[in-house]
Image 1 (tube, rainbow, N blue to C red):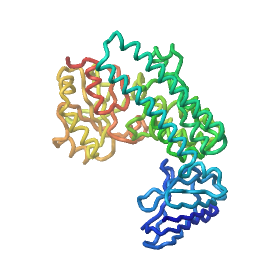
Image 2: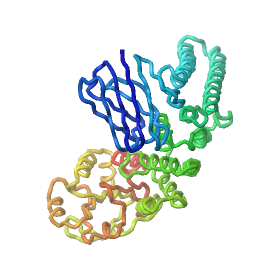
Image 3: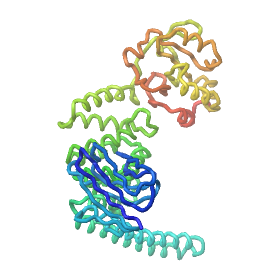
Image 4: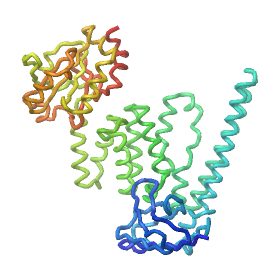
Length: 462
């Protein structure tokens, strides 16, 4: 039989005592939200282990494990007075005189809540299975009536599930359990006129995505439910990639301003996916709207203000429709020219460093792009590769090697105006632009896997 007793002391001295007749090499607490994980190693084969740490945990939900064995969920309710006792006896976990933690224990409110949700999900899965079977066997004239009946049943089940979630959240308002339930509550079905209009449906979903979010309980950010919800939201914004929805993202951030912790968490989470320069899912226009709004927030710290101002300075340039700044370069044959002197209906400007591994890999992929090569051969597209740092030897070695594709114009911005004057955001390379004949930006930060789709869209080389 397993007997497990834990005591977490004040924030400057977390102390966990474990008593068990099982043997663990280590015992640790883990945040599924990945905000904070603390691992407390135990001596092997001891029946009593004391685990200590001077730093407090972020308030929220944590898994507690013995080696890889999940023992239960514990709640750290606040930054201060992190004192908690629990006992595990077999599969049962109890929290004497601890209301909030009791909600998350084995056979607890939280487990019963999850079980109830599972039952609703099973009912919906059953309806979906009936639909799939009907598609295979039912005559078409009967199928519509049957589908209408299934849809009505699905709406009823969804409504019952939302009502259950709403009642549960209200009855535990102020507790983390209530915040978790509220944040995970499903949205009601949109009005029928919205469902029939794809654009209106998308707008409705984004606008109401955070309707039930527990912004006033910052502990929610150290729970798995928030991480999953924000993944879904960022994926939605990235997939739609529509500037018309940027005001809705800003509106969500303004809702989070109910407290500074909530606002900064949401901003940082969205920035990590939608704004970070190395993120493959960045949406530039959305990030610009976020930065502009953040700089109006009166509680913004000086460090954040400097960071956001710098980010906005980099990103809010060379946008689609802008004309790129001119610069000089020397070509492989020794001639000096400017980017504006290079005449072409379309231009791919490729800013790079010859020895950069990513630049090398992208160059190797591009040379095998059939549509790109046909577009170059047609005379309607030129690829201009530009090295912009101050090393004549690197430039010389590059243009005299097989790396310098003769199908492209190879240039060196020898006066370093690109770098010195921050003409482009070259914090990561390679950095590509698709330009029209007037050197206006068609696509900023063109990715290698976007080159041929754009060529096809513009019908270059056909």
